[in-house]
Image (cartoon, rainbow, N blue to C red; front, side, top):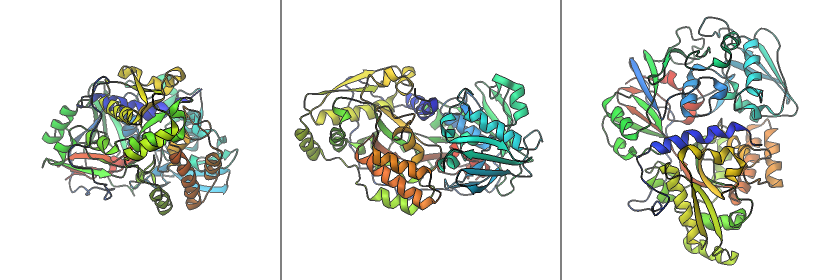
Length: 549
């Protein structure tokens, strides 16, 4: 049975896409085209935006919908993680450049199967109580418990024990080496909450009525349904190496409509937000009242391949479809130019360590440019003309629907017949959680990401044994061996080289179809500045850098 971790990978994108002001329908709608200027490859990505020079006062920040929970282990989507990343700290910390290291805890190692963390002596929760090893053990065991109601238990599958070794010391003992776990401990699964508070609130912990108790640079002020999550800077925050936020308060509100978001950003009623496939991006890029920044691609727009038989179960057929796919059209139409032609599923924003190794491996792969003549020539040798494939789609989710239509056009270009299984937006999630649903189609669109900056963060979910998103049951002995070796490799460069080896196999066989290396888009009204332009807003203390321009 698939674990529920993968729910986080799609829910936000579904609803975000449903709010877009794009129009496409499953029946009769054209696939994205390259009409207009061609999309240039973006290479000059931003990490940090200009530092603030004054207090910004009360800041309103947009996410695509209201926050539903502040319990970190249930934070599986953009609104929840954007809030939790500045409220609740993980043991390790992700920095703006997507590297990670010591944070709330300082890591030491006595062996390849034992990680020890010393909680900072000055760290306190918002109520003034010290952050203790007991709190950390409680939080990690809660995250690791398959019956604990969270989404991250699978990342602890090599953990033998989590125990306190003193008032501030935590030991994690492994059944075998697992250096992927350190990345997870710098993300949502590693978040530390106050044990006493969580136990007192019980099942209500993390809800509007109960709230949370954490140690981050912001603390929860008020939370009202329909009015957003209001946070204020934590005046007793322990880490003086982080900048003090130059603002009075930060309120996270749900803005599901592109027109409302655009108008708010222009007038200053909304000061900022991170956007995915925003239909009005072109307008905002030329508007003098806002600034648009693009960070390196972290999330992956892709077609999930769930076929276990038929044409798309054959890697060579997938290669023919890939050659026929109009990726420039998707970039221009759906992402409004904020993306690049991919070479693999995971782009440069995921290279948090051993950047040169990952870059060399990525650059060695061919760009996935369209070549219809070559696609048809390959398809002819495979004798697939007239065979049928089924694509899962939803006309109520315009961005994902447009991607599915482009994939449909590519299949038809090589002679395949295509049936589209159109479901409601609310039922689209079933392709990720219901074996009957994903088993009823050969492919469906997604926008996916891992928990930290290593391509393996995503690959391990869809191309590794037991992966929560390995819907086709794909396996390859060489890829599995490389992933296994990478997981147990301490050296960053050697570990990256092993992931690159597996990545080439995954890419050559198109286990999933990379569609676009989507840039991370940050939009701020001119009144504010300082937020990082990277995907760190999902995992690290991004708002500590925010303030007035």
